Amino acid sequence: MLRNLISYVKDNDYLIGIYNNKVYIYNYKKIINIDNNYIKIDLGSKKIKIKGKNLSVKKLENNEILININTEGLEIYEWKNKS
Image (cartoon, rainbow, N blue to C red):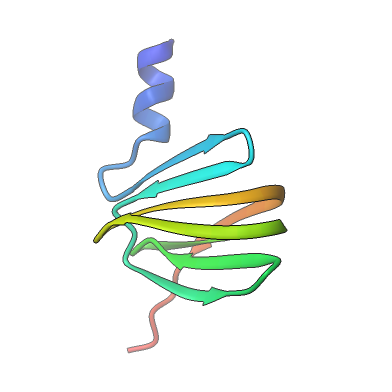
């Protein structure tokens, strides 16, 4: 069961880890928008919006980001590129 959960959560394109007041994202494409209360991130085929308070961002590497936030909500939705 744990193996199925890990394969479901761990996508080949990106990885999202949610911890106490922290969100870790690996292999994101770009930060779309950032504010004191939310951040939107492009994951390639999807985008994520994290809402909360006391947001601070620490960029770890070129494609890694750690977000410190008192999380109030997290939304992941399909990304429709306008070509």
